Image (cartoon, rainbow, N blue to C red):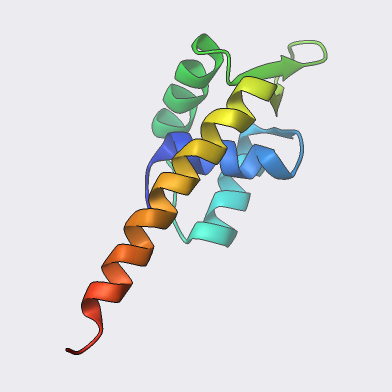
Length: 95
């Protein structure tokens, strides 16, 4: 999976983080390297949709949190992915 939106939301579901920590976390759990442009583009889109919000004063390392709406979106997207994975794995089994 390499969708930056889901990766960032998944990272923030564990707890609040600033951009660099999100990048490190995504690399650790998904083995995907998000470049700064991709990461901050995703953060901007997520913030505009109300799925994440800044925490505390805006400074050099802005911290973000996932919102209730963001958790709901992540949960529904992961459920849909789970169905795709389950179906794909079942279809790979030898007949």
